[in-house]
Length: 294
Image 1 (tube, rainbow, N blue to C red):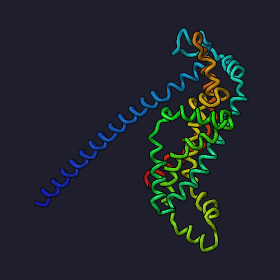
Image 2 (image 1 turned 180 degrees about the vertical axis):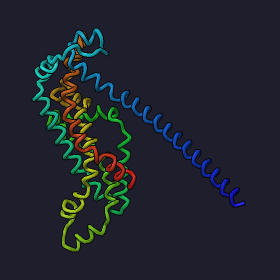
Image 3 (image 1 turned 180 degrees about the horizontal axis):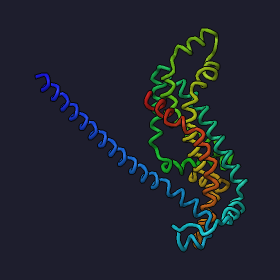
Image 4 (image 1 turned 90 degrees about the vertical axis):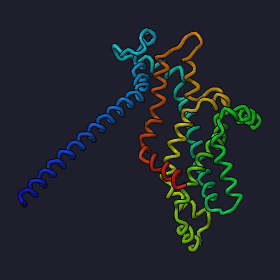
């Protein structure tokens, strides 16, 4: 009897091991399928960027003849032409000035506004927060004509003048994200600072703002990508002077210079990609902190 029980136990163990091996094989097969799918998706997503970089090293005639071809030899004339025709140092500095100025204003004003709205328990603060949140669903195309008229009336049709306009357009999203993050900060820290004699401004800049570095980095990346690559508002307000507007010179009605165009796109994308890679580790963490906790 004991031998029979032992034999049954051994058979059950063998059967369980077979089931475990089968489950492992199925899991590995699912992982392999998932990896293949992710690889194909990555290739599909990254190919346009490779297409732009590769064609930036090909003469314009070769691109027109075979857009999907590879360069026979590296051709750097596109970069020389793009640098000269775009007046790249000038438009680069203008775009950088707009991006840095707009980003600094959005982060400073939005963080202060979100902090006060989150810490003030009143119907007015709630209505103001709802007002900012509702602005998220309004497309820019709906308000671009009034914005253009307002910019002309206030004499903001210049590179410095466009910066405060970006503050107004970028604040709703930033306030929404900052508001959710501030709620996760314990109020006891502010109460301790108040007992020590710190006012609202000192409490915010010394205690609260340093704790917001994660969400600040996230908003900085999101808004920097928007400000650096924006085309429509500069076209309405300043007409010329940014990298995106200057690149229109290669897209004429009768002649399209694909080589210099792709070279200018490659050059202009390097700074913002470097900025993104520098702060990418904060993006998901900051979005989760600002949106989920809110």
